[in-house]
Image (cartoon, rainbow, N blue to C red; front, side, top):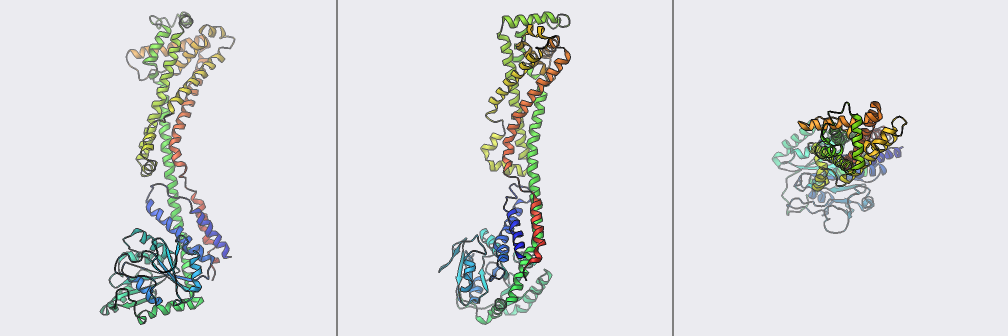
Length: 570
């Protein structure tokens, strides 16, 4: 049955393998730290301990700077296995002391698999776990001298927390001058929350303070939900030298307590079960908190995606406005339009002389081919410029919206200054893509005209205008509004659109012209939308690898562990 619990734990661990917190959303530093701690406890303690419930008991000796942890370990073992000293930090690499009969369990890296093992004489290198074998320590129990929990070296503090999370039993060492410090009590409260088996050693207590300090520490333990925790008091002593061990009589109560645990399989099993059950219980709180934080990440990533989408949706709306506000019918297009149809009394004669105007255009197209090509080129250039301006504006909006959020700034900073700068404007290849899209659209418009002009009723008129001429008129009709123009430009641009509309109606009829115009406009919009989608993809590509897994699977895995916790071996 324990196999099912172990399988559930492994399933939970696999869910935690993902990068749940890729962006600066919420208190992401605390979230990442909690995730790292949970992964560590699963790897370093829960999985190996459940896989070998009868493995030797691991007691981690931890505490504040200068509390005398290394001296205590040497004194308990009866030989110098660690190097105490006055310089801080003293313990640069943790030392694990075990009986030779138990050493294979620890050298095989079942517990704390991420720390390389070191054996032999000398101190271990930082980041390693030194294994020392000695027959002076009874079978079934190992002691681990941990770095200071309040070390000035961040890596030491993190390692101390990792080692304590891997312990079956905490031996927490403090002194008469440090027992009320907040940092140790932070760790002790964690021990309470996780029901970790605990023993406290109060060292360096002056003779006159033995009673009041001991009573006050017991009071604090009770107030923090740790009443009944074994407490061992070691008086302040004058040692013959700096690294001397404590007298055997002073540490005998601690040695006997540990010896009883190691010798009594039932007592040892109770310690293991207490700590193991507490660690499993803590998952019911810790995992949902991580799942909630992962949900915030998913929402934040979705918000960034939505910002990019809205920026390009606004850009598309701007392009629509640019098609309708008449701005494309100014400047070069206006000049080429005048060359195309000529000037004078054409607009005043529009109502009565559509046929004459048609003949005039036919003459222009037949005798002077250059103006229609120039008009088509000018229109093509204008549409391309509008597309580029639209894409530039959308890119700038997207970058600005991302920079307005911590997660967006984080993402852009990780992309690099150069990449972020390129994202703030349209891509280098857009100009060529826009030119191709506009040319293809013009070809589509000519095909529309050619198809519509093939009808029996309109074929003669269509032939008299020519496909190119009608195609240009239909392209101009797509940009039919005059909003945004002033003065004489309104008259010219308005006349341009009205004239093209009337001429088309004379050939195809008003309903057919509306249909053709709508189809031409829709096709152009679709091509531009496709281009903008490609531009938007530059932003969403940065988010593709950040999608955190659905927290539902994480919650299910945590519930499965709780449901199978009753299978914990006695």
